[in-house]
Image (cartoon, rainbow, N blue to C red; front, side, top):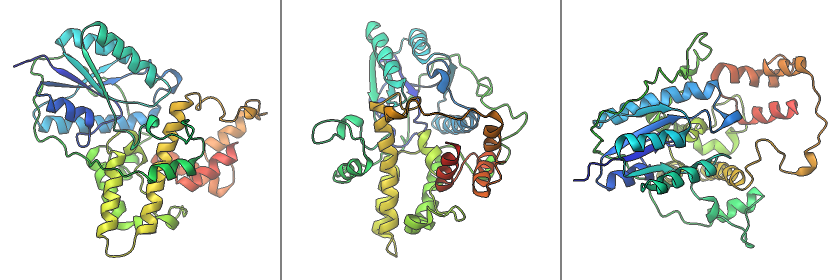
Length: 358
């Protein structure tokens, strides 16, 4: 039996179910070394902020617990991901590195670098899909270009039958048995809690795969039927609140899509309109990542070049009032205070708050 492990590098796919990368590694029959790398080097100015780190701490704890239930564990490291993986390959004699594809502006370069390092060392390197329903290369215009407008993009997506079904979590896994040095979750210092500014977050959120599926189940049972209208009302719990779970890959968009279709088929009342609106919101998320893939400068440059020289007002005091929810405009201030208290802001309020800022 080949005891050289496959390194399964968890990125934004912090789940066991419907994880193509993990399932391929398990199917290979080789021992697995699950790894998470806290890389604050590669993203540069886009490294995670405090609220994301709070969530990540909880999500990694959940993932590690799930792996432990199968008899293994999660190796934690920090540093530049390419270099850390190269070091892990050298330490373990790993025969392969498997990971899920990313779409951040730096993801492509990092993934190519990792692939080149693996090839130079005679190590197999495989990248898998799972963060989106459709890869950017799969949804193209009639002239074979990327879409710039959402409506035709969504029509293209909706015209396609998604035949694949979500995979369940592996029931058993063969883990790499050798002792591997790694950091503890506390070593990563993701959230010190002094002061405990996230003290109220647990009342609203349960990071991790189980929490994600609970959130989806609750939404489909109680809110999806009225979603087309209720999502516009900040004073009612009419949205799914799945966005952070999707962002950290605790649940896949395919799982959300499939569960929604099942809910429509089995509902005791007609929920088609709300469910269809929710599906279009999933595709809105897709569209945003497709744009980011083809225009990686979007976080720092306007989509339309004519806005590059927009005459912004520089007023730190007024900006601080906006940041702290002290503008005097109730809907704006309520949104910012909701964000501070819960880490989340209602989508329609978000639009108002952002429009007020600019």
